[in-house]
Amino acid sequence: MIRRKILSLVLAAVMTFGVVSFLPERVLESVNSTVIADTTEEVSLPSYMVEIARMVNEQRAAAGVPPLQVSPELCSVAVLRSEEITSVFSHSRPDGRPCSSAVSDAGIDSSYCGENIAYGYRSTGEVMSGWMNSSGHRTNILNPNYLYIGVGMVSVNGRKYWTQIFTRSNNITGYDPASILTGEEAFINRLYTVALERARDPEGARYWLDRLHSGNTTGADLARGFLYSPEFLGRGTSNEVFVETLYRTFFNRASDPAGKAEWVSLLNGGASRQSVIEGFINSVEWYQLCNSYGIPSGSAAAPC
Image (cartoon, rainbow, N blue to C red; front, side, top):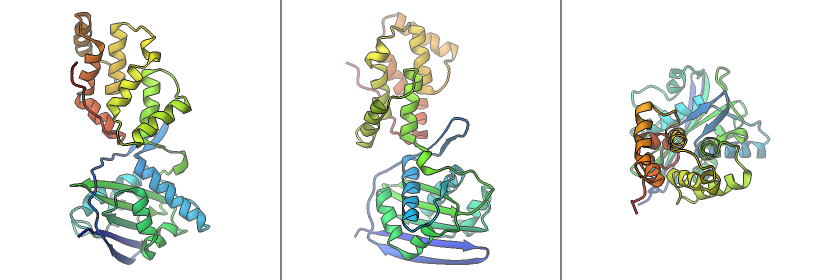
């Protein structure tokens, strides 16, 4: 038997109410997510966060309600709540406190906030449809008193657990969801900047974004595409510059002298650049970097 479940709650001062709905369960694939925010240059969030925030504002616009801003801080709380509901599917936290305590624990005003939770929905579109077809959840989504939204999702054993948190707090930072890059978009922009040392071109960026959305392309595939491109190969870089570029591309940092010397020595001794690239792809740092953008890292190619 397949099962889904959703739950909603609004908290205003000491007054609470909730609506529970039960729908068929689904078995779902695994997804990792991490909040990324760099307020000095750009703000990016995992794709599912941006997609849900944008869909919420589409629904609010249709209802004549002002849009919400998405808050990276509130998204971090929503991810925490998604982790918690994997063990206790309730608006009470595993320690027995109300869900609003997760908001206040993060230093965010929780005097007026709401929460929607769900599991068993495999995509952003499915879970939004489930919430909008339930009066309690729809009330939260369309509540004109809210100013900010946070979105979280985790996956355990292939089942996704979703959270929306709403608040009208005035002590957090928010952004228009339409102006925020998804993790995938930020990842692609970064490859243009670091590997090709230029801004992205819209056509090329769309090509790579479509590849990622296909579900058959990994971060390793994208890195190979940039580093094996005629544009990059045409530079004729020295081994030293090549290795430095790999450190910045795969590790997001400058090289350390000992590590760089070892890679340059291998290249000077006859190792192929392809083998060195695959060595970087097989690193923990590359896995962590891709994971921070919500991108599957991929694995090193088998040697020819």
